[in-house]
Image 1: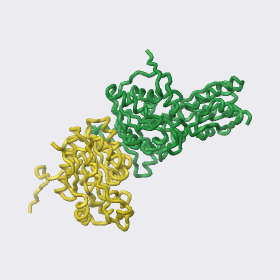
Image 2: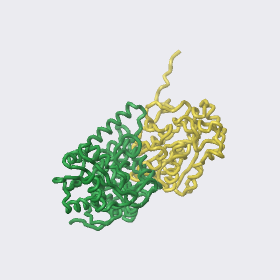
Image 3: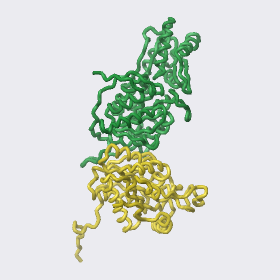
Image 4: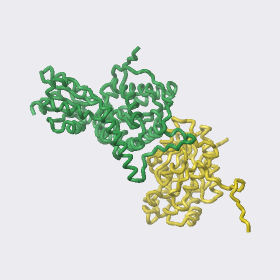
Length: 355
Length: 255
């Protein structure tokens, strides 16, 4: 029987972490995602599955606890919101460098600085371009629904272990805070697998395992970088995920992700009622970005409007993918403001159709 | 004159523990790290826990500690070793987990992680090498640099009015209910090294009791950073470091 519930995004994500067989969660409260750790503490998964939950003294400590547990080959996650994610960036860089698997959830709020607690998509660059120091990539999943927040926890762990790479779920304050119908997957068993790359205690006759991102010699460091880059090319080949709506007959195209894509889809429907043939592409993976699909669609349409709750970030990746084949314009609201479908339709008419 | 072969098992007075690798130490001549490593490795060997111990290396001179300990280890970001060790211990509560950190790592950039790991009573061993200077980066002032002590960033001597006082973090964390055993040792002379080893062994064994954090400070010399010969640095340490950082147990289990 289906396990259907009406749940708040943050709580559904926390429940998904328990059900995905996570071994540990380390976090620090910050609005608008504190319900994740509150739910976990209330639910006490140590009794349900043995999963450990700890409130750390800071986001910095939390991500380093993730490093330690991930280095033991465990399924481990943390969550935070924008200012807290900035603090985690040092640790994420080390995790990427040491090639450890983990899931990091960012329920984005508006910035810069302390900004505001209202929803935003202004951490796109930080998420997809690296964020911390050094040449590295996170796999970035962008849920548009509470359902996807749940499903991406499971997918996130699968991808993190497949590539031994940090995975970020780039959510936002809308998805984290809203209640929606969600189908929960069944409880998975916690894994007892021991990985050869993990510190589990030296095995007799085997070399001791070292989890590190340090190379003293540039020749060795370059080898690490080349290996990482080869892995990222594999990820780009295998893991692109997106959805398209109304693209078959489209004269124009919207590009939007996450909660903003849902609003944009409404704008798309309103446009079609007026006889404007517009489609929508919604990347579900922001890294790897659906370059080929955007490029293919660009060859068929007269113009693309990228809609985001920021000052224009994904639009740069859209332009790179379009590669000059058609016009690309941007419409965005920021600072915690959410665009309405009317505004988006008007922007399409003014910037693309009439522009 | 006949030669007598004295190389035989009954004459063996010292054997390198197999918990240390054969790799040549990168530490400067006379540095205390080598002895501290060996004491800890011998403890792991004697307890027979080589396969159950996970160490965490810091950033600083001992960043490459995992070259020398033949055990599974993780290399932490600067100051974060107690957080990394917390992550390890929470998923592997039955393993022996230790951090090995210098003064900059533990008492400056990692102060929060140190204090909070100790305050939670994480069931780990923290080994703290205090030589009052940043060795790896070339002799800059540390949080534990003595008043008036010269370094490359306190070239006229540490002025406590503008640079702050040396931080006695060991006394500080001994106040926390989460700590179980807190001691200050040195390894510069054989008797001291033996005492330090006994302290390390006790601290490691206490992990089985699940009573809280054990913290072993080792006051050490840094001939290169202090611009002294090894012998001079040991003498200077006795005359200047020990009065400020007195050796001995600071917190011992009550039973």
